[in-house]
Length: 152
Image (cartoon, rainbow, N blue to C red; front, side):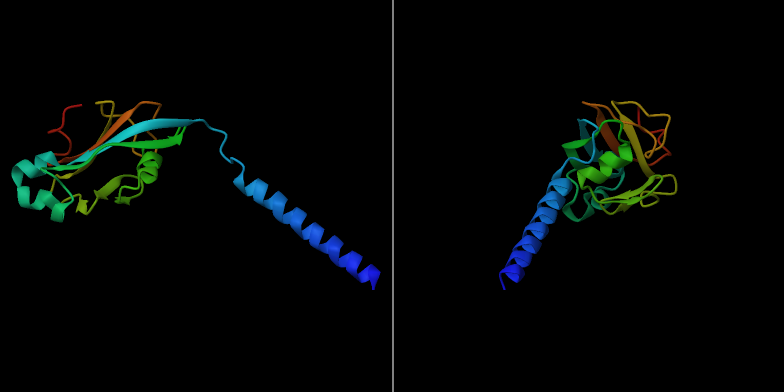
């Protein structure tokens, strides 16, 4: 009888040890990359100028401004795509951004869609390859003319 009790206590101790080690492993930081802070904004001001009712998006936009200076933390070397995912802003697309907050490419005309800038400049890479650094400002802007109407 004492042997059964001792075995049960040993089993309980082993289970607790496994649970504690597992918890410590799960709560440990898995990404050794340092966090960087970026700021993200989204607007469809050009569409607002052309079609204010469409640009209001059922209250999601204020005169074409959809998101202003949202702070986002991502790992060092993260892509613009990763920052957009981390921001929690609703979007569609994978290799490029097809829509944000219900406004999709083509909604503003045949040459409309989403462009992005990093620190006021068009990057040479796409959304999944363009990397962000600490303090970068990412702007998603809705174009009506394949980006020719957006300075950058």
